[in-house]
Length: 579
Image (cartoon, rainbow, N blue to C red; front, side, top):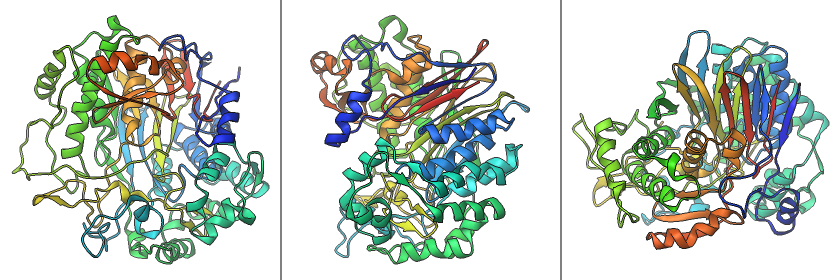
């Protein structure tokens, strides 16, 4: 039987946000941190969870017809780039974690954007040597890196696909030509970003027709995107890396209000990189994900490995002590992240998951109060180490996540992005937005003569917080999970894993529970939920507290002996479908 779970977004654009709040509010907001969430989706054979119902339906069609998880991902991503263009698309990048049931192997594909070969560490410095303002750097071509998503889609299909490549674009092409209703989330995002979207005429023409932001329910068509997908269906990803579409991408970047450096040579040279999964132990399982240039798996892994020595299950989700442990483990991991983590093809890195090292870091959590200060540790280092300095980069929330398990037991977790909402705001002639991924590099190049690991370098991939995750037990997946949300992704994913593995929450309850996130010392508590009620207790433990919106987009599928159990984050438009 077909089971579907639909959740609607909560964002902070006044009129539309109130409509969203009226439509769906997190249940259990005043009754503790264990939410009385909607029932999870259950199925026997396959499941897909994605950020928009139209995208999830495209993936479901593929799975229903016997396609693999990789096939379904291609269909989902093609639709997401159309219906959720502010979050991901052909002009961006992605990280994919894949479990191949036939071989029992887990691997990852790195489709992260790269810096143009003409870029230097001074990319975001003014002529006077001062750091550019963040938005000055974002809006325009200067922030655009070489896109990786199209090639990642093709590479995943080449390795694990079973369905015809060309047929995977049918749903997206049809929606682009016939039109689709503008979702509440997209309408809210356009309204909230209208000023920046108006900088480039082509972008304004699509999102602000006649100078008016798109409205919820308004039919939106994108024939240029349909043409791009047809070219991709016929020619593969090469259609975007050479020829007319590639020339249009480069022209858009170099002709933007803030011209960029991307070249045809950069596009032609781009490669997807297969990397070994990074895994950390937790309660006898292995929490596996994407290593550098993502900081996701390493930071989530450090957090959980430190927490593994404490009995969070006994404390429970309503315990301030549990959140002291989670919060300070996160702070310790983020301190290491800020100093050491970057593209490991360019920067040597220590063993940040060394068991003895993390055992020593975990001892720091054994007190009764919040740590007064947190510094990077000194993990094992077998390199003539550079004297590194922390960087200065701002990762703002956008992005999207896809979780899929197919009928053969293959599992896929992919986080996909154009970085900031609407990316660089530069519209490619092929009907899609281009990323602003280069602003994920540090704007600072050095500090007191010490180089910053995550500085810009030609061909380098900027550090990411994306954390697509597959939890493995006895060599097989038991949980497929991930989220958007900027650098808070790490906290969202770690919290949901704790909720599921320590507190026994099903995937829907785990992704629905109120958020508490601590990266750098200040505890962010999700406004309008029971998390805010913990503010006095956390302040008494020594934390500064900030009650604010925390807009995750978690999608989770648990693999059990009795079948699949899925959940979609109620803060967005997520949907889980299974049969």
